[in-house]
Image (cartoon, rainbow, N blue to C red; front, side, top):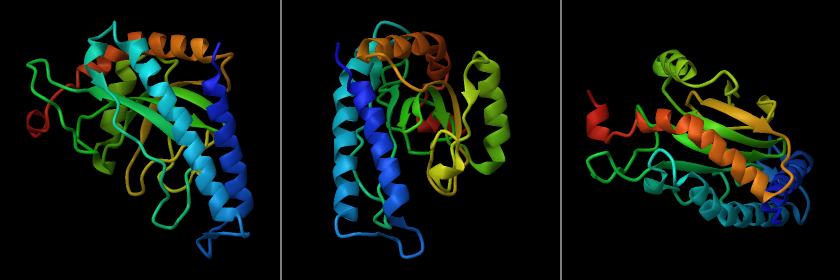
Length: 221
């Protein structure tokens, strides 16, 4: 059985340890002659593993909650503007069209856009619903989502500043509030077990994702 999932979390761990050892926060650069090259190489390897899991993840959800209409936005290996590379990555799923067949092209922080996210870090793998509301909408959005999903999907509270501010090493974009109602696994035995967990979580959460399957124009009211 393939073990891409554990290779990915091990790469996240290597990237995190390299970041801690080599990144100079004050100077905004990697120390050592091979510091930036090593960070870039690890980021590229993480992206390759992540991309290898995209189609299997899509196949795992296609038979429930109209999962055949779900797509995964492309995610490339890249550094922040500071030159620092993330020791984390994720796979986001969202619907490609409304119930009426109108193509959906979401803005990154559309008011009602909930994503089904599989998140990978040195701490393991999370599977759940991710949302990034503005500060004024945060508590209402959290309350609505928490009411809609089982209690096993706990808000993992991703940081908006630094992954080390989060116990699972999860970081979202600066200047946003982040909600991640997710179950968490430190490790899987193999890809089959991972994909079974994805399917199980989608069977539980897919309906909540679908209730927000609107166009930006619909959301504006």
